[in-house]
Picture 1 (cartoon, rainbow, N blue to C red):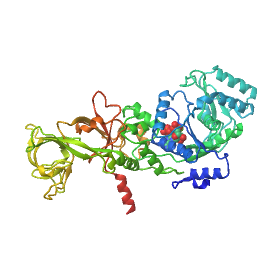
Picture 2: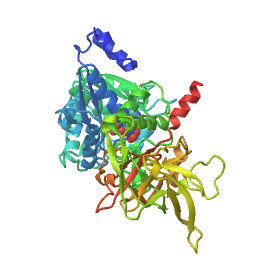
Picture 3: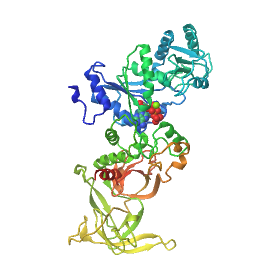
Length: 564
Ligand code: ATP
Ligand code: MG
């Protein structure tokens, strides 16, 4: 029966779980966890891990915990904990009451360490951090035993207790596992289990001055929570033998660790350390800057949880590293927004149009379709009057070949409105810049068609001047210039950053229905792209719209190219 559970998008981790269910390895249980360290905001890579862990639990009727791996008090903060919870929830997943912290296990982890000391499997070492490194050896050379390796159990117990009591200076002693300094896997050359660090922890305060290493805490935390499948990224493959060693030495529940390839995206850095640097050096406005690949940045920009979950499904789960084209993420976003976004008209770079033969002071309410993909979204009224705005780009005084939009003497359609013909151009006397157009309209073409069957080659969007709302519109591009930002970016972000990643247009004109815009509600500005109201900067009557993504779909093109 279990073999039918796997969905068509199967992958090697599902296969492992199916096999474990068949052999009853964990009495039919599937229990995963998402284990972030609260030292930064979550990014799109974490979304892959969240979708995988919570998704597997859901698919197999199991559970997924949220566990904060908070073993490093100097880098961790409550702000990060709160943001992580908000992001996981927003992505659509629930951990119910299973919100755990490695710091909740500090007492138990200490007892486990005492047990290992008693069994002769751990010792207190007085080497400095530099010396420990020096003694460790290299990939090609074995390490050397620490001179403190053969301390007696009693002495180790005494010293470890005094480490905890705060008798020694930071960094003066460590507790190390006693494994094998010549082991081919460097992780098993007597790794550090505890270090002295007189730092206050965001949850345990000043209670502890020794903290477990990640490598010691992680596996035992999984075990204490009864995790069955401990899923992590490939860089932990070499740590697995160490995690296994601890679990076996302690004789406790043994989860199965499984490694998968982390997500990499073109034009994007995905690493909390690098993202923190972008924030600290002021290259972006914060973790939730609309150009950041963080969940909070994507949310603010207008991404939907559905589009991110769909993206995570599409990229799959593999065992070897690769780089995903960011246009696939954008494609998933468009697919979702196309279904749900209300169409509206907004003019980003306004050019005034006066319709000379239209009655002064007349305002008509024209019917406009909210979403051609979804008739249940209905229609709305848009006001039409004598003075309008169109997009500056939609007019050329001297139109090149294949430019079908407005030009002197030419007739075009105004969406949902009338056919208009340009009969005059007014320039600024000093600068020569075109400041307004004069047009005539054909009253017979109301709604957008001519009874005499006359055809026009272009349909323009527009906004009626008197009723238009003012708005700032922000257009975004990739934060980095190179498709694969490398190490040099880290050293010198400035050189690698795209100087045009943000273009802010301050005097845009949008149709009056956008008075009801609220953060989280997507709109399609006709002919331009998908937009949403910015949740942070739209204050005090100021309206700021983020361009979530332009209409043009480069992924669809790539896919077409591949197929043909
Ligand atoms: P970073 O490399 O960005 O600092 P991290 O791995 O240190 O991330 P954690 O808080 O430890 O961040 O990550 C929590 C979980 O998310 C881990 O299980 C980790 O393997 C997973 N994860 C982190 N980055 C990615 C990624 N790019 N793709 C898939 N999973 C990821
Ligand atoms: Mg990590």
